[in-house]
Amino acid sequence: MPDRIVGEIPKSARESIRVSLREKGGNLGCDLRVATTTGHGPMRETPKGIRIPLARLGDVIEALQEVQRLAGPLDQ
Image 1 (tube, one colour):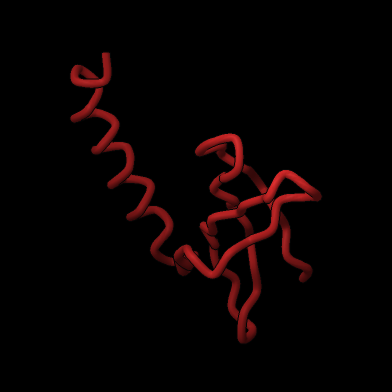
Image 2 (cartoon, rainbow, N blue to C red; image 1 turned 180 degrees about the vertical axis):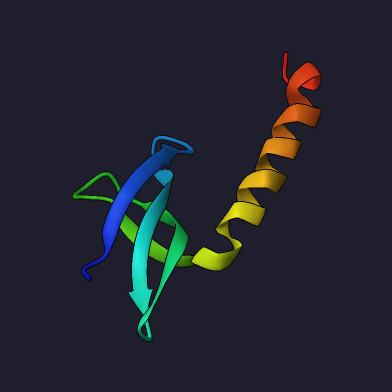
């Protein structure tokens, strides 16, 4: 299966967080990588990021939802 970029979340004018479904060593996982540009050309991924095994993705989503719930009143 080829890598598939499923989303890109802007951090700034020059950086974003790229969310990809990626196969590595025969295992599928969710990659969250910082992508950057110098302003000349497309965004390129950096080594900065994390890989989440698909079996743990639900746990990460639950934790992020809890962060969102807790920060909700503070994020005004």
